[in-house]
Length: 101
Image (cartoon, one colour):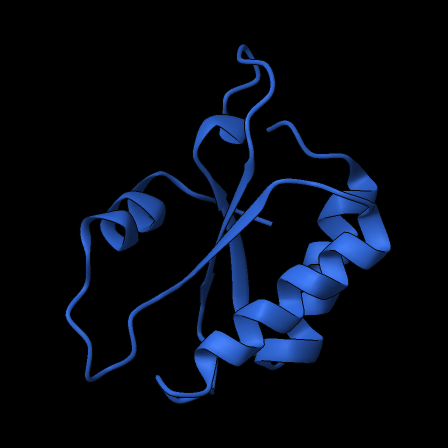
């Protein structure tokens, strides 16, 4: 996994603060592979309490706060589908290949 301990701590802290203490953050995508270089940071959030209408605001707050704390980074945040939403391929890939932070 190609994240620093500081990055991991910030992502976990922001997940608790913004999405709730029960929420989890998973790393997926190219940063899970130690042999690769570069790439954006793909995060998958699940177990949140926001509604499907509120989740976009929470994702944006998370991304802004992460940028403020870590500096400019390419961070993509995907939230697990709400109960009333149909899962997409990216949800399945993130859930199946992600690493819990």
